[in-house]
Image 1: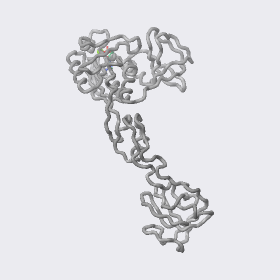
Image 2 (image 1 turned 90 degrees about the horizontal axis):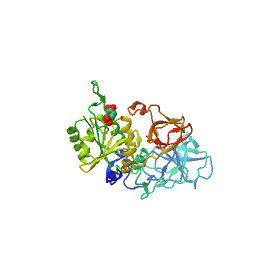
Image 3 (image 1 turned 45 degrees about the vertical axis):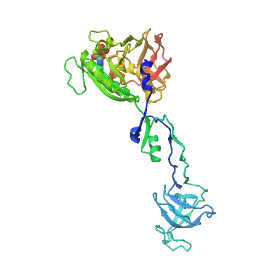
Image 4 (image 1 turned 180 degrees about the vertical axis):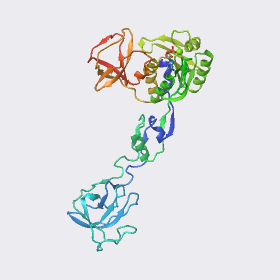
Length: 401
Ligand code: AMP
Ligand code: MG
């Protein structure tokens, strides 16, 4: 199977807008095109000062200007203060910001003798003054240019799975697009003449197709691009036609159903004569498995029972899809069992279970049709074939779902 699916691992790259990059994998290092911060600015609402002339506190200084975020850079006059808002550029010559909390405004409006007029500033000519109550250290509350990242440095390495915080960093340096690894294209076909889509009235004997949506969701959740989700009755011609259509658009096709030992096994009937290999894997659920090539496109044929189909995906498809997408492998955990359990000897069992604090508890019910119970699981217990009875507290291998 590894060889069959190995072409999926050879991938190209594509540029995508930042928001579409969420969950995608960076194809190459992203280098910062600008410094962050891009200019020296204030970290607080307060007063920009120069510590060389401010040598004792309290000290009352004339306020020469009021700077808002978005204003341009002005020149600092030694011995004065500039009222400054968070994010406004520090006046050149100032080297510290005194937070508002460490100052007291001087309420009088007496013009200050030594105030040098600054054009277009709110404080000009109004004689505003401020008393600085505490001496700032040089550099206090100043965000230096490039102190977050310097232009030319690696902002995000190739292989990063893009999350909201990465979008923030990319947006901050002004990027609108980013180069990501292409996603493997997956098609899903569920088979069974009993299947109808959700939203349909269920005629006698019919059931809703859950494997189609389940396999499509599983593929999408593991880095794939789902290009087709189809359904076929147990009619060989119909299934063959749908398979050909799926193979025309996908890099891998997953089918469900029609691979057991019954009378209407459409997947076996169509793919058997075309060189498919059907095997019985010593695992439960998910024993009957098959592989085929249709027009050079690999096809994995999963059994139809809903739990079997999902477990088959986890065991056979998820690792390769994640590797193809560039996503990290899902690492198994080791946890103690909350309660004892027994497992069918001779077959590797994948039992539905739930994390329970640091431990794990099996979910009762072994039937492969129990899809509502499966929805309450968050892990599978991977119980080796030679294990039958497990005591509470015994350590088991746990595969996160
Ligand atoms: P099969 O593997 O085709 O023999 O199907 C085994 C069991 O799984 C039967 O009870 C089917 O009705 C059920 N089943 C097969 N395909 C689906 C599906 N897509 N959604 C829900 N149940 C299914
Ligand atoms: Mg069937």
